[in-house]
Image 1: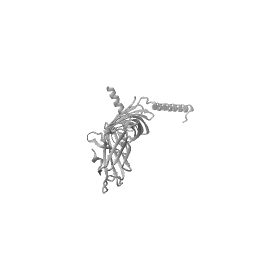
Image 2: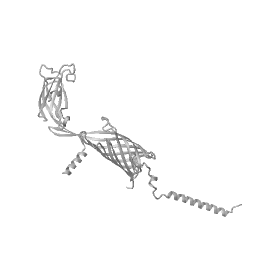
Image 3: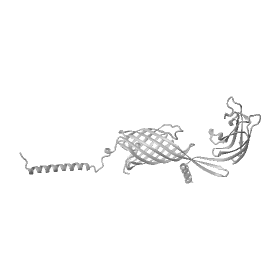
Image 4: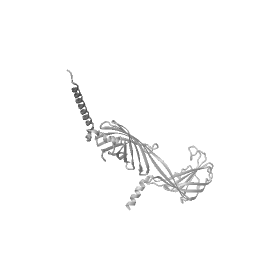
Length: 146
Length: 237
């Protein structure tokens, strides 16, 4: 047994792989809605997070962003994302409508914009359905999760 | 007074004999050092530092360097191969977290009784532990310049180190797994400036400042210092 441990240690030290990423392909199918009277016109900004990032002690924290998308309008969504398997777990989708087109959620002096967040507990799976309701004004993902 | 011809011939013959005898004596004096002279007559006091700081010892001469410092420490052996070549083996570490064993060849580029200039090519493997772990094949091209000023040997080392780092990405798709590889390079320009002091012909030490800029230029570099002990040369291997 010590020989195997020594061999494993040696191979680990002499290995040549540095960053070893495992990405899980997820096809997301869903609907994004904005309840009236909130403004629903404008680009839809989506952000995909790991719910919990692996870490120890003070280095552990929620919400690790791994992908972003910008879609022209609110409505049906069919997107493919690559979910990182090794650095955390859980899938969170956050979105907001950029109604004034400045690329920023609720910039100072600008009109309030609707935002929302949903947690997909069944991730990861290759096919996932979701519903995202943008009914919170000017709230970032940290304010909505957990 | 006149000299008889036969006497003149005898005088010339005697002079020739004396001349030939003197020449033979002088020639035998040139051939005389069949025994090796005393070590102190052929080995300068800075021999160990010239070999280890300036590089490229004589054939079959072995030198060892043990260097400790912050953050860099190393163990190095130089073995002279002749024809101005040297076999080099060294193991370097930074704070016990980054290790780089290498072997290589050195060549004496210029030699003078006051100057030693050598070039070195080293190949090896880098292993860095911790959250920023790195591993991969590495190579270094290095120039050594030492000024031989008696017991004092100021020196300069300039090097460029390159490490190939391989990254693997595995895609888990519905249709199956797919693996892709990508490669990046870590560049570490290097400079050491120091002063060696010869204690004996076979032992000396040096203090120096190291400036190794790991993963330049997207990082910052902290200068380091070291104390080195040098042993050698030991001939007749």
